[in-house]
Amino acid sequence: MRYWLLKSEPDVFGFADLKKRPHQTEPWNGIRNYQARNFMRDEMQVGDLGLFYHSNATPPGIAGIIRISRAAYPDDLQFDPQSDYYDPKSSPENPRWLMVDVTLEAEFSSFITLEQMRADPRLADLLILRRGNRLSITPVAARDFKYLCKLGGLKNR
Image (cartoon, rainbow, N blue to C red; front, side, top):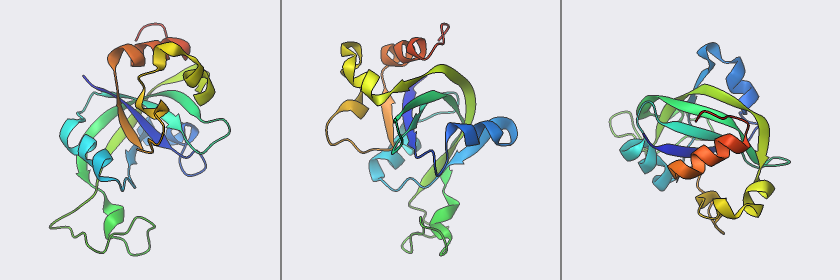
């Protein structure tokens, strides 16, 4: 099993939105970075767990845990000329962009802010804390994932 941090802007799609979805499941679409796409394509597997991170928010931070519930498949938004994520160089025969489905696993009782993470020396290796990192999907070490779950109020992860 692998662990991930997946970023989303809560005014676009937040943890509260996921809670309202049928089966609390949603496609994680709109990824337009090749490295993040490659993580989905080459490394993410059904059953992996992720941290749902609210980016571009006040405050930014982690709201809970999601599970990868469907392996990478073509992101349909790349084919829609009306979408902000349209890619005219992509085709159904040769798609450039992928998405995975995520399902809500657990909500943290304590939202973990970016400020808290930066202040905690045990989390110094988190990619999200590295200067200049803007990836929307990053791998997380198992020890960091478990520690963040404890900070979020979950004891059995």
